[in-house]
Image (cartoon, rainbow, N blue to C red):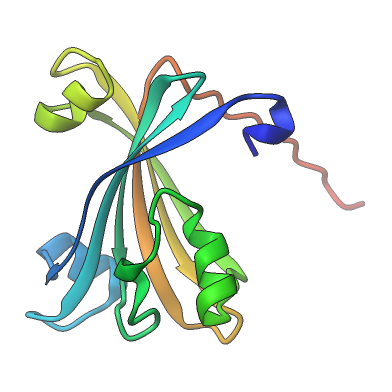
Length: 152
């Protein structure tokens, strides 16, 4: 999307590992306690300015060799090209939060700065939940625009 807007995107990998699902990841991915998940953290840039800190929780049974790939590229493209999975449904939730600790530092923001949190649950072509991502956007880097058309 950034390239379509003539912007220069970049992704930096902070960490990628297999972990026991946190309470939040278990709830979002509808997993039983003590399940394994892939946990990926990345910072995304526009014109070398950090704009969003993204945390992904991924069901490893859907993409077992994911961590062996270059995770600075699009996960959507990796899912399609390496695993034959295509996002066919996404549930969004948008709320506000504050940037703290490592996240604030990575986004070159003061701890406690406001942020927009975009939570996404992504489903494949068979209706299976693949992953969720938590996008922590700098408050000054995001604008949401929508057009609603009513049927008559």
